[in-house]
Structure formats: structure tokens, C-alpha cells
Amino acid sequence: MAQRLYSLEFFPPRTPEGVEKLRAARRQLGQLKPAFCSVTFGAGGSTREGTLETVLEIRREGVAAAPHISCIGSTRENVVAVLDQYRNHGIRHLVALRGDMPSGTVDAGEFRYANELVTFIRETTGDWFHIDVAAYPEMHPQADSPERDLENFRRKVDAGANAAITQYFFNADAYFRFVDECESAGIRVPIVPGIMPIASAAKLARFSDACGAEIPRWIRRRLEGYGDDVASIRAFGLDVVTDLCAKLVSRGAPGLHFYTLNQAALTTTIWHRLGL
Ligand SMILES: Cc1cc2nc3c(=O)[nH]c(=O)nc-3n(C[C@H](O)[C@H](O)[C@H](O)COP(=O)(O)OP(=O)(O)OC[C@H]3O[C@@H](n4cnc5c(N)ncnc54)[C@H](O)[C@@H]3O)c2cc1C
Image 1 (tube, rainbow, N blue to C red):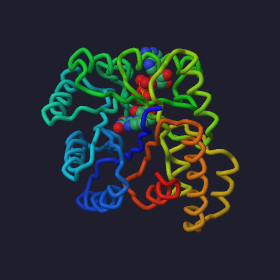
Image 2: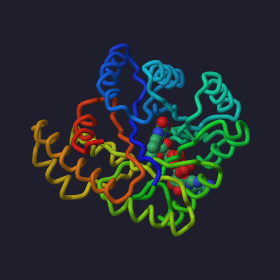
Image 3: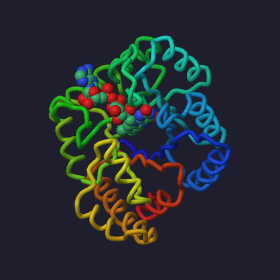
């Protein structure tokens, strides 16, 4: 098996304090020697410049960095401008996504789905970029069925994606089943599990509702039971997520991608407990 890749994800901070906090988090996380760090694009009102600036800062710290690029609401011209900017900076690794329309907006722009973005990137830039795309072991919330979602995932791989990073999940079986189904369907790219450390019960519930990730009942009820006891929530979350990661790695996952939410402590503890 190829070497496993352990990577981290950040979002571009929107305030000077956020920039400082992220720098401090990166000083700690950089010691883990991640394979690369990715930086989200356009999510939560962040700007395209924020993504690029954060990527360039990470690179200056000696760590490989990959910007995300999303296409919903964009024109071909906008996407070309972003790709040119990335290329001019020598960036060769992207995470390509559809993105989500802000509520109330109806114009999808010139790209409807991520497979169209991947096709366009390959048409305009050939093999310059290594392209990761998103995958959903528990099914994307807007998909008609798991079978359709798998077909749509295949379109992204057929369009030229090199690898995938999954939405987070807490049920390892959903991931292994998805990987098996891809294998049976002849979809052969590494599918790296996305890992969400648990810092807050309320935040986790909010994110999970929005992105369709299931919090198993036994985890939800435990978290609810801890109420405002943050230390117990974090201790329980660390146990649950470390066990999940250990299971994923021991059963052959090609790496782990941590959604750090720009915080160092939980990811660092999980990383050390796993002995990565
Ligand atoms: C690892 C990761 C990183 C992310 N980073 C960001 C980020 O930086 N910025 C951001 O805004 N969002 C980000 N997201 C969220 C992502 O944009 C949303 O989950 C979005 O709803 C779907 O994006 P996608 O690229 O998976 O879309 P797609 O692959 O286009 O899929 C979206 C939906 O459309 C369906 N579909 C796909 N193709 C077709 C087709 N040809 N015909 C009919 N139906 C189709 C799929 O089944 C699915 O239900 C990220 C998600 C993940 C997992």
C-alpha cells in the first residue's frame, strides 16, 4: 500500500485576531509534520484572497498547502482567474468542490456540479493540478439515493480527480461500505476519511444537521448528558474519535484528514494517541 497521508484542514480567518489564533494553532500543528494542509474556499463568507493568503503563509512555514476551490455561483471567467492565480504561485494541489448556495440565492452560475468543475480544470490546465474531491460515505444530503450519489462521485473521478476526502462521519462501517462499493464499481482512487474532533456538542449538532453527517444516538445522548461540562465533552469526544481513527487506519484507510476548525489541541492529542 502507498504511504498513508495525514493532513489538516483550516479555514481562512476573517479578523486580525483570527489570523493570530490560526498562526498559533499552526505552530503547534506544524510539529506533527502533516503531509499537507488544505484551506477552505468561500465557506462561511470567507474571501478568495483569504484562502490564497493562508495557503501562502503555510507554505512559507515549510508545509505543503492545498487551496480549495468551489464553483457554485461562479463563471468560467472567475474560475480561470482563480486557477491562474494559483498556478502563478506554483500551487499544484487543489480540493475541488461545488460549494453551497447562500440561502435565498437562485442563480447557480455556469457550473452546477463539482464534476463540471473538475472537467473544466482538466480542460484548461491539463495535469498541472493534483485534484482531490469530496465523497460522502453517509450520502450527500441532496442526493436522491446512495446509488445516485455513488454515480455522481464516479463522474468526478472520471472527470480527472486523483483522490477524495470524505465528509466526516462517526460510523466506520459507512465508510468501509462506501469504499467497498467504489471498489466494486471500479472507482479506484484513494478515499481519505475526513475526521471531525468533538469540541462542543451544540456546534457538532449544528454542523451535522447542515452537512448530513449522522451523530449516532449513543454519542448524541452522552454529549447531551454532559450539559455544560466542556471537559467531559472533550474527554469523551477524544476517546470516540481516537477509536474511530484507529479502526479506520487498522482496516486500511489511506490516511486521515482532520477538520481542525483552526484549533490545535484536539487534533494534536488524537494524533499523538494514534502514534502517527
Ligand atoms: C473535504 C470537503 C471539503 C469541503 N470544502 C469546502 C470549501 O472549501 N468550500 C465550500 O463552500 N464547501 C466545502 N465543502 C462542502 C461542499 O461544498 C458541500 O458538501 C456541497 O454541498 C457539495 O459539494 P461537492 O463538491 O461534493 O458537490 P457535488 O459532487 O457536485 O455533489 C453535490 C450534490 O449533487 C449531486 N450531483 C453531483 N453531480 C451531479 C450530476 N451531474 N447530476 C445530478 N446530480 C449530481 C450529488 O449526488 C450531490 O447530492 C467541503 C466538503 C468536503 C467533504
